[in-house]
Image (tube, rainbow, N blue to C red):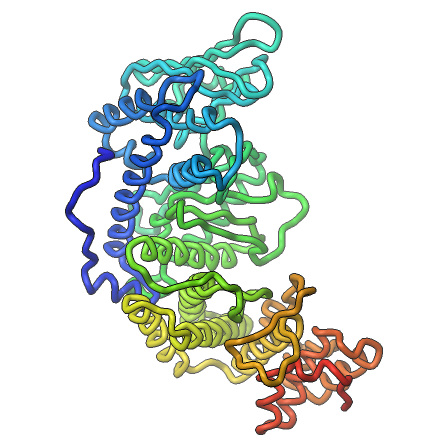
Length: 570
């Protein structure tokens, strides 16, 4: 491992780019992206070290930490490479670059720079070398990247400097005590079942990093993905305190991950929506540390960062299929972020003016590209679920989501292709997505599922315009004027239209069941009291256009905001 820049450029083989442009990507394609991310991190780290060399600090200088890290890499290259490529390492490097350029905040800069010493300590433990560092401690805690966290009972609270030494895989940490003197802990982080580690665990001084595992039916080496609730740079940007999951919550994550990995283990080529769980490096559980209250069946929040390849932040859902879908979705974001590091795919002025069919707010062009790429993968995921579905309910659900996501993704691809802002490589990428989606749009889905998907897509776009766009009949679609009072709104229909209503009662349920006339009457009842209520008005417009198709209906769907006044009548 070296921080020197090599002059040999990265050249992606055409076949690998074609795989990724189609929305998929083989293990070879993902491995190429990972190698490129490694090179990028080393270049960024070299830049960062230049900024930190002269930083006043009570800790061991960063140059010494870097020296130890490189020496450990020579002795034990594989574990040190894993440390370098771990998602939190990428997050820390980018966060620190933002810190030195004044675009991010956090603890004192010297303390955050000291995280490099923690990386070096982890590397030294893997290599079995001897080191001694002055390190930052927060409330007596020292995170060790890739391993876990040392806690020193009785240590002084707040930010302090401690001493950490390693020798033959043994770690000793000394810190100022809360009263007088010092406290000390010794453990062997790599030998989690050793007697002294059990003793340390009883004293609540060592927390190992958890992993999620899955062993396939063929008995091959198990997949192990980090479940990171400890690393301070596991978040998308800011320094984050540990949020240890309780045992029941950790077991739920293991159960769901094991089932999700089985769902993803579909034989066949590396097409869009097919993910080898081994490609995922870390999952960050977000927002809940215990099993109560019960989670929603679908993933409420998930996110990833281009700085943290292979990492993803997820609120645990109640269903394995929702987790599997999210793993596909977030890995798509990682792949595209890596491509954006290699190629200029578009010229984006960052103006938030584009409709994204899965968002409630206007998006900039890069965000739209990310969504199109991610949801193409999601469409492929549901296409595979449809092919293997058993039972009418499973067929209807998979057919609905496949039909919905392919339609939405193709609409986004068309917006991108007509934007005039794609580079040569960007046009090749989006054209590849469009070809994949055009092929899928010709595939058969049950009429009922297809109807619900088309209706839900129309409802979302209609409500989006009602809530975001200022009525301006003369405005071109690319020159929208947005409401200054627009706010986020709950998208109740994407998941609400997935099941086929057996006994419809509400207006939405009647519309999902195919009874637009009954739905229209119920929407009109709501609008009689609240003529501009966007949810009901969107439903009324879509139901009306189903009953009376034609040129007027197409115009009403194209610019529904024109109907905000006066109130509609049946």
